[in-house]
Each structure stands twice: as C-alpha cells, then as structure tokens.
Length: 130
Image (cartoon, rainbow, N blue to C red; front, side):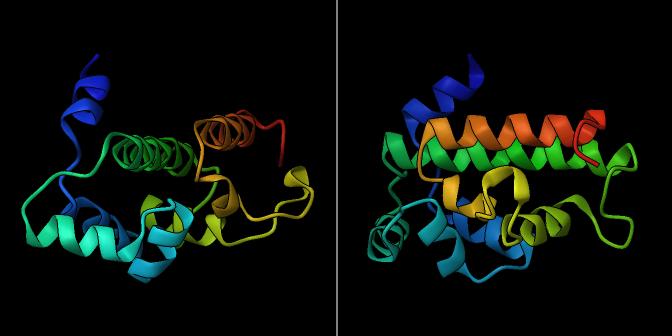
C-alpha cells in the first residue's frame, strides 16, 4: 500500500534526476524511456510540485526494477564489475533476444511493459535465461 500512497501523492520531480545520476545515464535517457516530457520535469521541479500520478507510477516502477537488479547482482547473476544501478542502466540499453531484439528501456512507458521487464529479470535471476 505504501507504493500506491507514494504514487497518489506524487513522486518529487528531483527523484528522476537522482535516478539518472545513480544509474549514470543522461537525464534525457530516463525522461524519454519513462515518457516524462523534459519540460514537465523542469517545471515541476522549479515549482516544487510532485509528478503526476502516471509519471510517478513509472518512476516507482523503475525504482522497483532497480530492486530486482540489486537482488540479481547480490546473488551473482550480473554486475560483477559494477553495482546494481550501473548493471541496470547497461542492461536497459542492451538488445535482448527474449524481447525480440528490443531494448528493455523501450518497455518503460507502460505498466504492462514494467511487468514484462520485471518477469524477465526474475527469469534471469532464477536461471531460466542464462
């Protein structure tokens, strides 16, 4: 229920910038992947307003995917030379055969896409995709 409450209240706009910094990716990579217009992000940040519900939901979805990546890295399924945030940013940009050669970042604009990516990460973690 906590995630729902955060989404309903709205994620602070600066969280997107912090995620981009943590993942070591350009801010425009995340805004494009999450379908958050850069102008909206700047305006919300400037006005100290939280993101809209849909935008907040996608940001929280990415945060959850980061948690999945952390588990994967901790269990030795990836990221031997980097932390989970860096592993996730690299993986999001990599064409994946299980996604018909598409990049996971292409699926971050919808809840269904997040579910697909989360399921894929779980399969990687369990060894179904080595």
